[in-house]
Length: 585
Image (cartoon, rainbow, N blue to C red; front, top):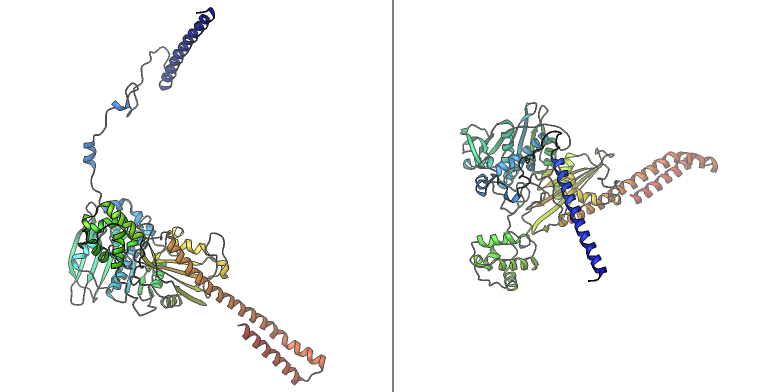
């Protein structure tokens, strides 16, 4: 090795030694910094290592070797089934019981919905008596009585003391209730806030005995607890009376029970309602029509609205022995021709047993069903209010110059039929300098909360009402003397939550709402412009009536006319004006 190479090697060795010394010094400084950060050392005292914080392993102990606080067996012992009643006790806001004022409205609404549905199913013109009595400052007792068919004695405890119990969930036709959870949840809320049971009086016929029940909910088991079951004297032929005492707040105005009762009378013009608010004079809403609405017919699921998991379950539970029979009998609008086309495209034998299909077979079948051309589902499952009934209800309730309504043809979303209806009242005694009143309804039930989250409100705001002779600010409802009532009827209304307060924004629903709004807007604009023309002509007529005598006097003086000729000229001018005004009108 040369002298130059030896010198370079010595320099490299020296650099490595210097790096080791720097690294050792840096580690020492880091240890001192860490110790000082964890616990400062006191002067003249020997520092002792600080104990590890609670719940953390010591510094020199790996987290992987820390003592476990619970084993899988201990965790398994803590796990148990959650009752649906327990869930809604802790999450009652999901059902509309999130504040006392809203709780009163929700409880009344659930009882009224049950009564109207019962009368509708039995083909009886409803007659309801609703009473709210104030028991204390924040305690009220509500009673809802109907003239429906009554309830069989053995079913009363389950209907009012068990959540998710009813006959409507698996039925595809228009009805107010859907989940079998409303009235029992109202009773459970009353039980939680006041400790009082739900009291039920029911009678199924003039020759049957009336039964008196006091029922509470066992929230741990989601089962009814019957505190009283006895016969009672009740002077009605048939019907049901439900009484619930609950903690609540009563207020008047918008989103109140009073507002709900008024809108319910509008949406159900065939119903008679007697309403006694607390500490006030009773109100009576007579029937606007004396004919029952069209009875909705139950339909079967449409293939377009069936998801893959649901199809798997239906094929496992079907009583049909072949796939072809299952598709024809368990679904609507599936003909022999469609069955042959679907099974051929899905590579499935028509005579195969439904339970023998593999998941991949069902997945292919589902994909083909979604793409095959099918007829829309039958629409006799819907019972719209009707244009004439809407006009009659609005005319009976409001003093207006113009009342109109439109009912769109039925349409479909996700295989579920639905229909949009809109009515409006304009002018008259309705305030002209305020935003319009928007009444949202679904299956004849008023929706009073979560307006901004509802598809109905979105559709109204998406229409440019200035094109229809109304004033409108950006992002707000139009201003003017108008009541707008919008109703959606469906076999399954897509509510955004269990409290049934807003409708989801399905494109098909938004489209139908906009088409109905624009059609009614064109009619309204024609009416408003016609009234403006009439007002302008009346104004012009008043001007000429005012100046015609002066014109006659001037002509008489200028032309030296006789008084008789002056009167003839004035009469001719008036007649000419009348003919011109009639042509304009």
